[in-house]
Image (tube, rainbow, N blue to C red; front, side, top):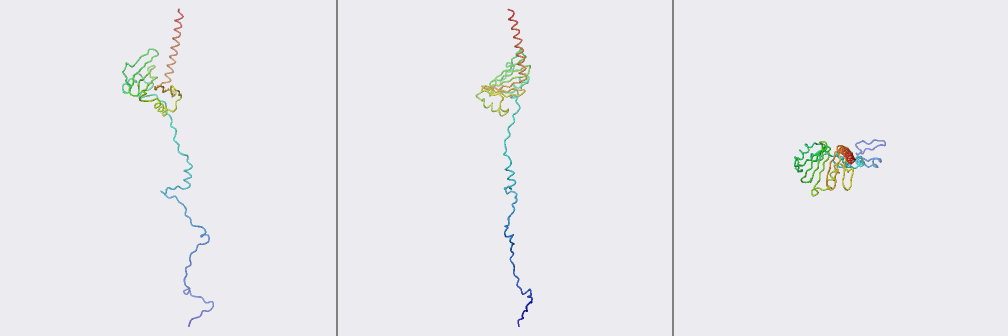
Length: 222
């Protein structure tokens, strides 16, 4: 006989089949999709927005303007202010100068001046050196236009010393407190020691004044 269940009786747990309840997300979870947080990975090659903004704010790189060098006072080992014997030694050692020794040296008794003039080989046709009181105050080099041109020397000097302070169809001139460097047409480069040259000019003016006085006294005797 099948037992009957009275109202209020409890069904044993074993009699109730176990059912799996599917897991469901709540309304808030369903409405918010899952998103991944971007992270910088090494070697990815992709910069983060912050680093991109930093790079964009940097100014573009600019090439610095070259600073001109101090104005030169020497050429091939020959320097303004050197003695006659020092110059002779340099000229003998450099094959670009056709120096013949004392035959190229002239002594001027007036104002204690010495002149050395020599021919040149290769790029130099002729060189001229003037001494005052035993020191080199002027040196000039006339170039061979078949081997070097005015524009090449001009661009070289400009790249080294900056734009010339004086520029006209006859010459370009660079100056400092001590030196005057000029490139003269047709094709001569000249170095001058300004202090010695000014002193030489002053001495020349004194000599001219003395000569004028003596000439006047001589004429007054007639």
